[in-house]
Image (cartoon, rainbow, N blue to C red; front, side, top):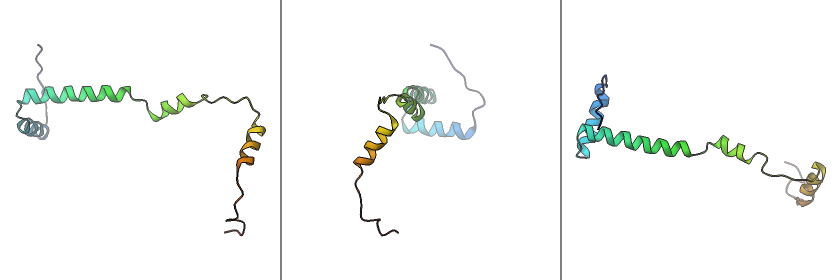
Length: 90
């Protein structure tokens, strides 16, 4: 197994890790290993997720319609229902 030495860690961060380790009955080394493994597992999961932009790009071009635009517009307009609510205006 390899060894790792961490230099230049801020006192506040060290204290936080020490508190976490004590709360979980782990040594500092065990806590650092746990935190690193947990982070790597989470980041791998996040990397596999598609961004909203990727989802949108996947949808682009996914609907094909051979009808002319005028025919589609006419169909949409014919499906609309007339409402009396706004006939008098605002």
